[in-house]
Each structure stands twice: as structure tokens, then as C-alpha cells.
Length: 164
Ligand SMILES: CC(C)(COP(=O)(O)OP(=O)(O)OC[C@H]1O[C@@H](n2cnc3c(N)ncnc32)[C@H](O)[C@@H]1OP(=O)(O)O)[C@@H](O)C(=O)NCCC(=O)NCCS
Image 1 (tube, rainbow, N blue to C red):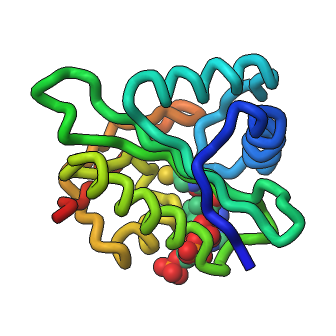
Image 2 (cartoon, protein in one colour):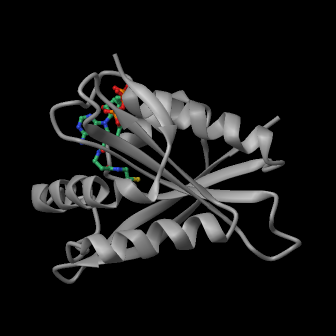
């Protein structure tokens, strides 16, 4: 049983642990970043919320934070109808439909907040592309020079879904 809820500032430590766990997997299709401190996570949460965005978290039956989706709303008045997202589910909890549930909750938030396009950037090699396609995201762009890894370029897709 998984519960999806809006984030609280008190989730910063658990959010940091989730992010650290993803970074430590060294997945070839995830950007290499430093592990943030809990204080940096607090600033991150405050920044997303203060710019009109939202973060939803998924908790297991023991209230362990096992997934998250960040919705970044564009701030320019002529672009406020758009939001982008980032998503993570803890290793060991994948392929159980939690990612789908998080994206569906995010889609409801878009409806509630007059956001009519949800989009993301994803490395073309990420198996998550299949999940996004299944949830009706379509490719609206390909940047063949999107990322440089060991001197080789990798494509980044922009995928988007119109929210009606
Ligand atoms: C992408 C992610 C959030 C999906 O969460 P999830 O709870 O496993 O998603 P669901 O159970 O709803 O759907 C499973 C789908 O995700 C795919 N998937 C994507 N990345 C995966 C991974 N690293 N391991 C296992 N499955 C993955 C599965 O292949 C499956 O696709 P399919 O239905 O087309 O076969 C999760 O796999 C994850 O956190 N991956 C690592 C971080 C990441 O890649 N984030 C997205 C960056 S754009």
C-alpha cells in the first residue's frame, strides 16, 4: 500500500536519502550530481514551492519515503501554463506502478492549477521513456548533442503531454 501526498519541509532528510540512493546507483542515464545536504534539500523544496510548483512524495506502509515527483512551474506570465517534472522511485520499489501513480497525481495537480502542458527532458536510453509513452507523453524534440559522456554525445528527448 503506497500513499501519495504533498511534501513537507520535515521531509528534507528523507528526500536527501532518496536522492543519494539514486546518485549512488550510478545509472548511466542519470546526470552525475553531488549528494545534497539536508539544508540544501530544504532550500530546494522552498524554491520549488515559492515558484508555484509542487513536490509529491510516495510513502510505503511504514511511512518510508520511497518516491517523489517534482513539478517545476514556469514563472514567466506567458509560460505559466507549463510545468516540467523530475521523478525518482527508490530501487527495490520499481516496476510496481509507483511512478505511474506519481505522474497521475502530478497530472491532477496540473488540472487543479491551470497547467495545460506537462513536459520533461530524458536521456533517450532511459527505460523510463517507455513509461512516459504509455502515459501519453509524446516526443516533441530530440537534442542529439544533449549530453557528452566520455567524449561521446547522447540524445536527450523532450517529451510532453497536453493536460485537458
Ligand atoms: C523512472 C521511474 C521513476 C519509474 O518508476 P516505477 O515506479 O518503476 O514506474 P512504474 O512501475 O509505474 O512503471 C515501470 C516502468 O518504468 C520503467 N523503468 C524505467 N526506469 C527503470 C529502472 N531504472 N528500473 C526498472 N524499471 C524502470 C520500466 O521499464 C517500466 O516501463 P514499461 O511499463 O514500459 O515496461 C524509476 O524507474 C526510477 O526512479 N528510475 C531511476 C531514476 C530515473 O530514471 N528517473 C527518471 C529520469 S527522467
